[in-house]
Image 1 (cartoon, rainbow, N blue to C red):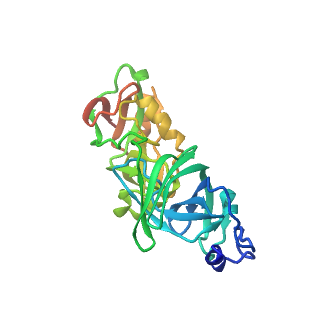
Image 2 (image 1 turned 90 degrees about the horizontal axis):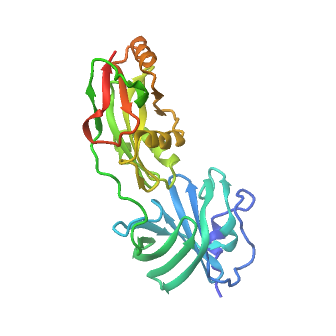
Image 3 (image 1 turned 90 degrees about the vertical axis):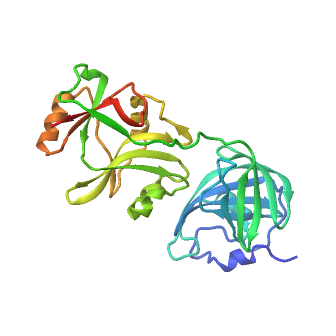
Length: 315
């Protein structure tokens, strides 16, 4: 019988990588275990590995498992891996095959409904990945993975940015609002899915932000501004988080979810916000020569287009 791990071994040197490199050919297993690893290599992807005949049959999935049956994701068939890879995580040295950080995203068991050279149909029983999926070969090493169950998340909201109405003075009931700087920049909604964002087409430096989200989905609202001579994306709202639309949630809930992301990077940051602090924030805006402040009603949902729940007060 041929050694199914020969190709795996040929790509690795156990003196240079912490990966398991067993010397012996694989022995048959139970054909029930699976693991999905998040792999920050040259490009972010997820590795799906299914136990089969003593090895882990593997696919690299650039965008992760699809959450909606309406969208299939590419899955590139790679070499079989040893069963020891079910628990492997760590740093593969730069310059080695697959160099980068690998973490276990999910693990569990699976049931096989069909297994052939061109089609693999399974039911995953994991903590984060569960349900029926089918992998089907399209061309060469390229396969597609399709979710067969109903969607597991809300659809991305199709919204226009929420815009403030102008007021000469701050609202009298200041305790009902949060006050933020009006940056005077260019508005930008940033969707993040599968560690990628379409906003990186215009702003390539946003790839790092998207990769930091891993498999988490999000829709962020903010502005491109110039601070200290550098272009910075300042985020001040979160409309979608980890499969759940927040558009109908009050501003306080959206703001709490945004702050929980702890966004801070070389070209992006979370905008400060001060509930009830109209006077000091307006004074600070004057001192920094900003256009003014925006008062955001704490109990208001996200309303696309002009809204009286957000008020622009000039400096």
